[in-house]
Length: 294
Image 1 (cartoon, rainbow, N blue to C red):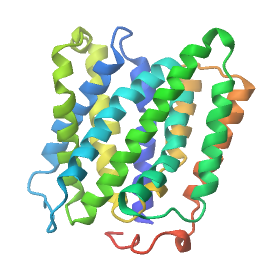
Image 2 (image 1 turned 135 degrees about the vertical axis):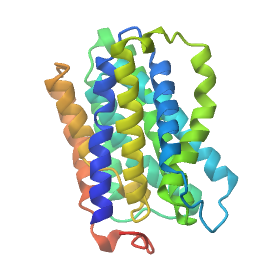
Image 3 (image 1 turned 90 degrees about the horizontal axis):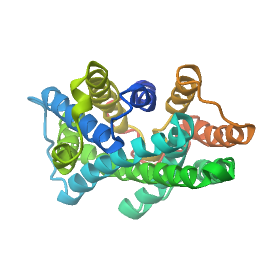
């Protein structure tokens, strides 16, 4: 229960990401926003990892590299998706596709076949994304399609990060150390962009506040809570309704986003799939999942 509660908390923090980016300076490039987020988050995570255990079992280098690359790619694709499709659609597609993609990638990576309601959740994700894609008018169809494709890429990137992080945590590494190193690798991959992209916006009060919020709350704090819970829960079962619900509410109430009835039908179908995963019974969980700190 404690593990799921920490993941619920992390999901609420994650849900503020798109809104925070949308409220930032209009001149801030989505690539620059994602890069600054992971760099600031990585620096904060290094502080939390001081003196923490690196684990007792060796972890394959590819797990560290793929986890870092997955997180780096997520930064680039998610913010671009939100920019093109809006906070509501971008977040729901990314989060709705992630459980299906995580289960599939975990199956390929470790041979762990998905069980229980994952198959229904996957069907909901596919149907919901198709409806969301079809909900845009012809005038914005191209932009909408690119935004949804980027959101799907963000879901796949997140899935790679989750599966590889699960392997790292299974080695006995503390969740603080694991997240610090993974984000450090991702930050090193993206840091050169800070010297290429226009970064003047970060010197403004609005830009600095956005960058600090993204680096601290939905990154350092949220991913520490996420990793704590991930030690006891399967990667494809850790996504809750809290993130898309939070993002949707913020998008409507704060950003005044308006969507068609068809769009909301797609959002609800994706949400139903996530709800099925959130209600997954303990008997559906894979052997060994309950081994952990909670």
